[in-house]
Image (cartoon, rainbow over all chains, first blue to last red; front, side, top):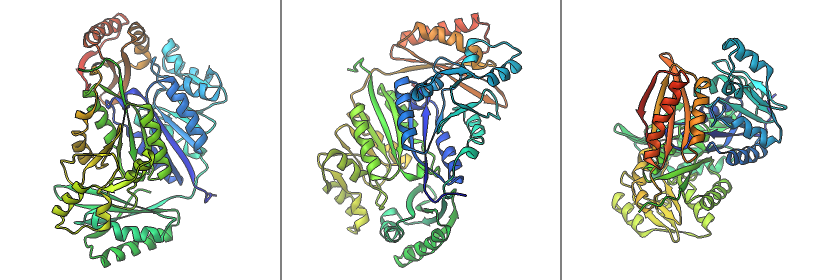
Length: 254
Length: 254
């Protein structure tokens, strides 16, 4: 049964290629949505370079502060793939070659396992494997830390083996009210009045601008579905009283 | 004249909408590329919710650790826009209504300034304005911290007024060697050999997979353009000696 206590997670994105701007991260939002379906809040994200001290410090800080930590990137066979080493160091344990991964690789490469490929078979003592349904070696879990690939299609595949291991919170319900033709300056006061009346909910305003027009998406999020729905009605009424038109209720990811 | 000392920056992305997965951040990679043209390394990224304690702690940590900090998001008029308050608190100063912003807004809204809009005119004592060539009020700079909008088109416009204030490092040169048809397991050993011979350079491997095939982009980055070019030639030769084919030199953003 889902607990009513918020369950929190952090994401640690590891890789110079993200910080150089060469690669656009799309894993954080995918993980956020995935955790949302389990009622778990993504509470913080960090992006660090392929640097041992930085990775170890971030792993230790985030795993202590949040219920779960999910890392992405740095688990390939090349010299700059140091995530497994750093996570082992953070936990104060050593890495060993996991026999299941070695067997899997020997089957795939007909026994030709060079040193680089063997690197990918290393798992910290006390860790368990996270299945990789896409291709290549698995990720691993140690304690409350899940170590996943950086390639988005593989990361998403691995994530499917993470969810069943999580203790879920209450699922967060989100509803969006789209306001066309009004800026945030006009919306802010009625929105704040409704937000103050519902301290358990999160009310946010996300403006948009395009050639076709402007406006804002107002998102009401919370764990009590009935309160979220009632607040959507209250918000629309409060906006109309303030003379704001162009309201449309649209769906939003939880 | 550009210094040879690495100059570093961090990005702090502020907003529940990023952590919920509702909005995909694209500002970090844009800032990374922009800083790259000034020879400045983006050394860390953080994503925090609209929470005062989290924002203040992150601002104070990151501004002390790196040469520059750029924040995005949370500077609109709604109750959840608390970035200015938090940055002022981090610096131990108060906010005041900046007369230029008030005048700008009065001109735009013909004197109709409600409380929500006035919120956007607040700047910390000791801060200076960062021009907004797109729309809406400006951002601001205080010390080594630049506070920019979260909407990407506006953020990028504001960024143009940030660069000229930065002391640049040496520009980083990046070149990419695309390898088609070989996995990282085969590439790792020759790549590492070349990387070990050039400790001043950063060599990374970024695998790709698609229906059309697979391979990896090998990126050589460094501040010495001649060494980068020579290393590209050495890398290609070392890969060929290892029996790897399908090499193509392609451009990459700096």
